[in-house]
Length: 215
Image (cartoon, rainbow, N blue to C red; front, side, top):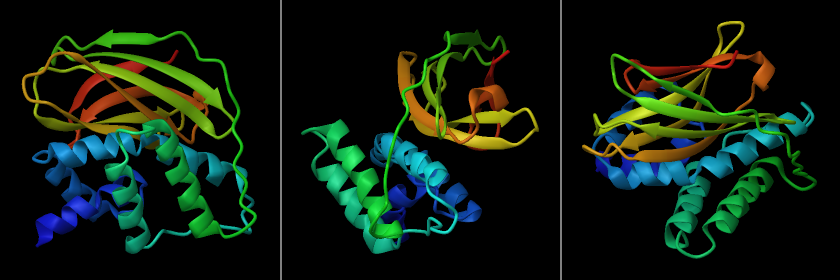
């Protein structure tokens, strides 16, 4: 029964509304569930839109946590329509979450920044290769990451480390078993590029696989 509940946690995990203990337990589940790993990646655009909204909305209208029924409904919508208009559906999901938790009058707006030159690195110890492109947005940083990692299966995450030592998880994914091809992920950080000291690709249990400096 709990395994079924873990499948339903994918939307809450991707949208960042699980507490720390539940998030760690769900990451253990990701190690053995390719379906949930794929769905976490599909929620990336929705997560970025929520981050945009959080930056654009006055503090008098705080963003509350969506309830489990709402998240289940959003997950179902993404899963059943993933093959038809995937990008359009995901942005519609993001807008639906905003309207559900903020009520009438919520407004989304975006700013198209200019991407910096890609940063590439290979870790001599782990053999993991990564290339990252960061784009400044009004809400923070839009990130595109390519990774080659033949040591799967394992759950990984990209962490942005601020110049003040703070950390934010940009995106997470599941590395397929014995697959050294490059895989591409998208994510976002609330920090602007000038406030990010470096990016680190880590496993779910914290092992550092490769570091991408921003300087």
